[in-house]
Amino acid sequence: MAETLFEELKRYVGFGARDEQALVALHAIAKPHFPRISRVFYDRILEHEGARKALEGGESQVGHLRGTLQVWMDQLLRGPWDEAYYELRCRIGRMHVRISLPQHYMFGAMNVLRQELDDVIDTAFDATPEVRQFTRVSLGRILDLELAIMLHTYREDLLAQQARSERLSTFGQLVGSIGHELRNPLGVIETSLYILRSRAGATVDERTHKHLDRIGEQVGIANHIISDLLDMIRDRPVQRQPVWLDEVWQEALKAVSRPEGVSVTTEGLVSLPPIQGDAGQLRQVFVNLLENAVQALEETGGSVSLTGSVSERGGVELVLEDTGPGVSESIRPRLFEPLMTTKARGIGLGLPLVRRILERHGGGITYAPREGAGARFVIQFSVSPEEGPHAPVPSAG
Image (cartoon, rainbow, N blue to C red; front, side, top):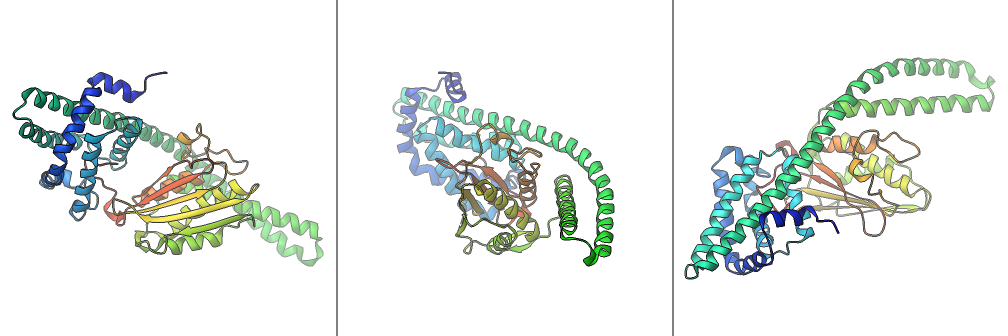
């Protein structure tokens, strides 16, 4: 079996079974110091204006973030240092890209932890120099692994983000010119259709009326596609005001028709705090996601559920699930790219527009496959997105 990247990194820094044993032993000694270390860590950050701005929610969130850092240190020293650990740590690098965090803050933050934990080691193993030295080496190796993982995922996601921006720029130039050009002939068709209908009256047979209606319907679809395309390339201003997500979801339910075999349930939305956002744009998010879920269930029937909760970071998290076929693994990396679709109808603008709107709100969306079958989308909002999305440095992801 081929060596995984995490196995390669461990081999590169020399991290092995003896290091794991040393860290587990250190965990029992260092854990009582975690609250103090977390205070030192965030006190140091608050002394530096640039690093302070990297905190989620500013100073008001420091108390919560200290607890998050203690969990991070617990995992750091307790393990297990397996592929699940690697994936958990990868999320930190990805979040650093999402919040545009300069990586020198991450290096500086890691050095604070290194110094504090080294002091714990020196005090605990003062009488056993060999154990002290090896424990310090093991700590250095795991922290080097942490930095390597963060930097690797940071680089990967940053390159992907840059490539996506370049594609969107090219896409935008094309759409901007074609979209406006198409409006003119569609406007002529609409005007002509209006004249034909007004002259037809009762003298035209039912079949002709049917075709006139079909022309009007297709013109409406074409205009809707052009509007979605233009929305993808322009920064529509977000009219921020308190928004209750349950109310927005109820409006979206009214806008999406569902077959009898498709049921929709919600949980936890009523108790969510309001977010600052644009209700109209957020309604479009729910409509697009709900339409995708319903279309996936049209032939077989099934259920769609939306669950809301307050996340560990104090923001709002929504999980939309359906019992359909889900998204194939080969498609997932490109799921939110414009014009990417596997459906017989549609041109692949729904999910890219959803992500675009959520990013305007300081939020985000990820695809997380369900066990067995079905799709799961996880949406995250900051309670006060006007401050922008922020994260601790480092965090447990």
